[in-house]
Length: 449
Image (cartoon, rainbow, N blue to C red; front, side, top):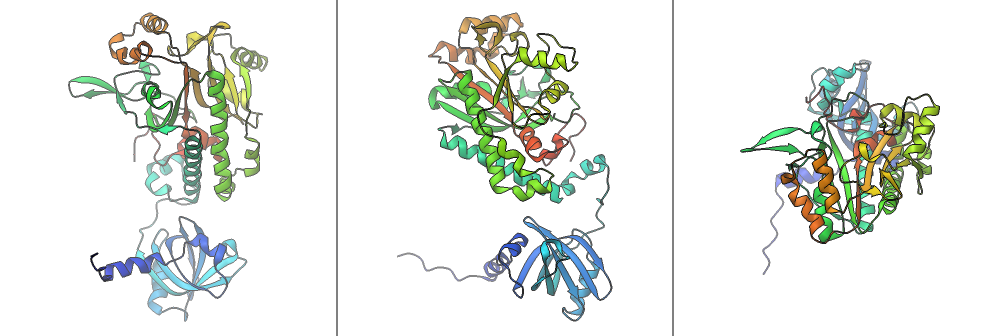
């Protein structure tokens, strides 16, 4: 026999009672004037005229005005409302009423007002320096702007995972600690790993390459670390890296996967987060144009175009942030730049037999000047070629023996790429700086809080 259900204790009833409160956002979709509701949240703004308090409450779903008026609530509740400072947490019971002056045209006229957690004077006011906001990042993430960015980011990631699941990719979990340099030793964070040296991962690529021999198409979403002393609006030292590897896929197929994936990510943000995008200053209709196919431009053509704009470039010059901005400023949809010179690209990229000075690679640049969001390539499969490249760079082969085994035991044509989540978020949300695309940014100058 099954055991008899336990009777609900006082704690269970309390939790159930609390869960009955309305999210603020739900009031504007379902509540009608005259409905009695309970809302919980934090005081976003407040002002008092003695006998009445106007408080704007926020929660994760939105904001609503609450009026606390003498005679409608116990005197103690009115006193509590007068004393409650910004960011105090409160529970309000009251009646929904129309008021065109209130945010959204509705307000809650309180019959009870309870302060759950009082707040000290909040250190962030309307006009503050970026440094103060960064020093108080643990508090600034409560802002409506950061709330909106994090919701858009969540939808972008959800859109990616949905597309990947529907296209036979398996999510895997590569290590963060490694002894291999994937993107170059000068940007590695080195640490002592017991009795030897190790690094924080720059990329999961090599481990994903190993996994395609079992799973075919794989992806991971992990933090990556780059010790670049770059102080630009698009660089973080720690960022979230969506990386894919695909067996039996060439560079052209790799680009098709990228454009479909990015379009799905943008489409999900448009479907779920139109209001958040508007709050951030992005017209959602601008993003409707983001759909395959994306324009493809060879590196040599891009360099010619930039030279015509006055940039001092030649074949072999890298495209940095200023060049990428100029090249994409008037674009509305991401653009692929393909076939970079092999001298400026990594050892694992496959040489293009139709153009031996270049490799079969592509950088995907976001429009409107936001720059690179993806770097990808077809991978070199010839063992002798990879060994020769590593030896030419004076790289000890011992740390790469396991990676070289992938070419010794049944190698196949394959490709892959890495997408910077925060760079996509910055573009989609129209953010000035990438640090606002992550809750707690890590840059050259900051590892606190």
